Length: 124
Ligand SMILES: [Zn+2]
Image (cartoon, rainbow, N blue to C red; front, side):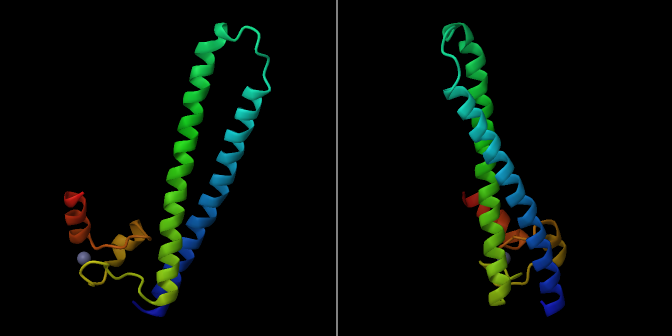
């Protein structure tokens, strides 16, 4: 992979990263503020509102799940950026073949080529 292509993917990854970190902050704040609201809330009529509280918890779990997925993705992006710096970016970790640019365009943090990815998924 030449330098220009590497730079292109670096920009792409950095843009994704920025988008994600913005999202994580937003989600975390939402989650935080809703738990603060719950804990400082009036406890009279507690049992009456059990159903509502249940759905709040469910909603919060959903949001937390989202944050975790975003963190995972962030981790992958950081790893890809590190590989760009090291010059190992765009190479399949298993067979060492160059990952097609079209695949990197779709998944800029891909670490495996398609055949290896498929084998890897079967194994798991
Ligand atoms: Zn491979």
